[in-house]
Image 1: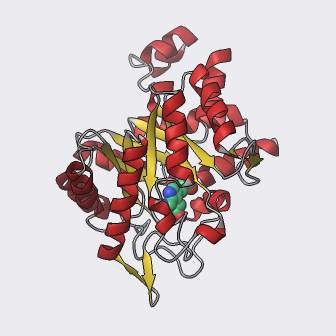
Image 2: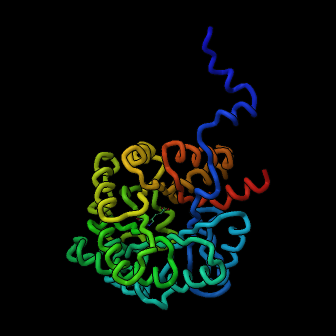
Image 3: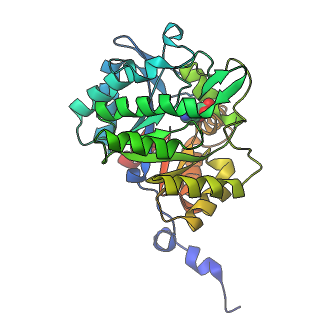
Length: 324
Ligand code: PBG
C-alpha cells in the first residue's frame, strides 16, 4: 500500500495541523432574549442554559460574555400580549423594550456589534411575520412596518439589521429607508433562505410568538427546495444585502454550501432553538456528550461553508475555550 490516509491521523499534533476547518469565537453570534421588568432572569424550559433577561440583567450577561470574548449579539424581545396588535405598532415605538435594550447595551459596550431582528411576529397579535387580512399575509403593507421597525433599531444603535420575515422586496425597501435617513453604514443581514421548520418551537416558547392561526408556509420556504434558495439569494444581493443567511442550519448544510458556492457575500447560518434543544435534551439524558456534540455540530456548519454562525451555544463554547 502506497497510499495510507491514516498516516495523517496518527497524533493530535498532526491531526491539528491537517485540520481544514476552524471554529473561532469571533465567527459566532450569541442570541439573547429580553423581557420587561427589573432584576429578571427566567430560564426557558425548552432551552436549558438560555434565559430571558430584563435590561439590567441583560447588560450584566453581555458583560460576562464580552469577558469571555464574544463580540456580536442578536437580541430578541419578548413583548407582553397586551402590547401586541394586528399591525405590530409596538415594533417601532422608539421607547419600546427593544430599542431601549439596544441603547443600554451600546451605551455600556460601544465596541459590541448588535444584529437586530426585523420581523413583526414578536409584536403581532396574530403571531405572524406579516399583516394578516382575511387569513392572508399582506406583503407590501408589511414592508412599511418593517421599514419603520428597522429605522427605530438603527436610531437606537443597531449595527446590522436582520430581516427574518421572508416578505418579498424587504431588503430593497430596508436599504432605501435606511439610506434616506442617513443610515448608510447600517448593514443588512438577510435571512435569505429561511425555511418553514419544525425546529423553531423553543424560540416561539421563549417569545410567546407562535402563530395564533395557520402556519408560515406562504412566506417561509419549503424545506424540500434548494434551487429556490438561489432565487432568494440573487434577489437579496441585487437589493443590497451585506450578508446572506441560511436558517435553520443542521438540516440545511447543503443549502449553506450552495450559497457559499454561488455568492461572494459572507454566509451566515442560524443554528436554531430546536437544534440546541435536541442536543441539550439528549445530553441531559446522558445519551450524547453535549460538549462534543456542540463542537461537532458547529464545526460541521462551518465546514459546509458558513462564515458566521448564530448559535445559543456561543457562550458555552466560549467557556469551553477559556478552560481549555
Ligand atoms: C421570527 C424568527 C424566528 C426565529 C428567529 N426569528 C421564528 C419563526 O420564524 O417563527 C427562530 C430562531 C430559533 O428558532 O432559534 N421572525
